[in-house]
Length: 482
Ligand SMILES: *Cc1c(COP(=O)(O)O)cnc(C)c1O
Image 1 (cartoon, protein in one colour):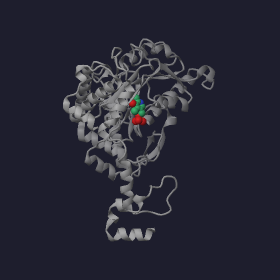
Image 2: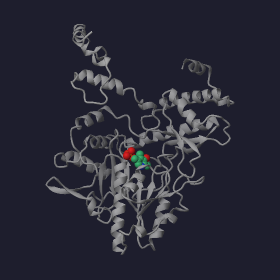
Image 3: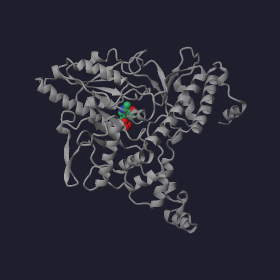
Image 4: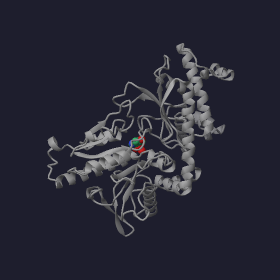
């Protein structure tokens, strides 16, 4: 049959509206070269969507930190703003204004007194994510260190004596390694050990010297959900600075914690309430609850000492000029609009209600994990809502958490297993990120499947069942059906 006859038949029976009957559906979509001819928009849309839907189910993705659900009103606002360019502040002054409002709200949420104002007292910018925020935070530490070092008479070109270094705990997110490689900075890792799952405050200052551009405090360690004791770090830094030639500063990587901690109880000051914290970054697309593509950084003081002038590029805005600081140039303003919508929509009380729910779900997961009596919970959700656990030393099972990951995947759940950072890399952990879109019902569903997964693994590996692990008879049916 040639294509002409084929398409005529399809036209006659009216299938052209249904992509399944289209000629295109009978062929593979182009993958390597630009196709020669166009195809109808509705067919292209349906085929691409059909293909895309084969990936991750948002509710069952317990691995990601990123937002998978926003309100329809937010989606509409963001869709309407897709054709704007966030970097072009004079062409899109309202988007630029909303960016400023968000920076201001974050600054005050993080402890800058309400009497202080954006640009006059502090400064910040939206970014594409925390990666860009960390890169900017690191750069401002590096360049301001350089200026201070030169003032103090160091030859900063003499890398043999003055190679700049950055101090961070070993469970850092990969962006910090990128930062150090891109800018030729030595990455000094404070290792974790049995007692220190976050930055080891007994030893951190051993890693500091006159070439240290700063210390990164992590308000939410990606791998475990633990937090660095930034309050203690601040005290240690204050003590060090009393006699140091070059005083040390702290940047807080708050990618996920900085939009969680302010809304719940139980956190010691970790932000601008601390003297030596000069900048903080956060991902808007994590607990800021915006779809992937937005982050933020705020610098405590709008001074060239904190944010050096090489990092400021003057752009026109409302008949004046303002500093453009972001690395990325053109990108849509949709995410800024989405973030601003969330802030005005939820307010303090809204975020508090949501994050408290998130916390109770995380605590419930810990309770349930403990009942198995084979898991040792390493992060229990009482602070950041990340559940992470290992197999208990006396678990006495012959399967691993990698097996559990595979077994849960059969039920559609993504719960990654991986080794702890350097120094404890022989310990494997599993991690669940509890996000606002997880409700108690979804959790109930997950827990049922977790019991089944453990049961199946015990059976396959011939391990003894603890009472808790024996599912009810209706669950057993589910096994044979699955
Ligand atoms: C997620 C994360 C990052 C990177 O953030 P993106 O928004 O994904 O670019 C950096 N640091 C920490 C601690 C993170 O958890």
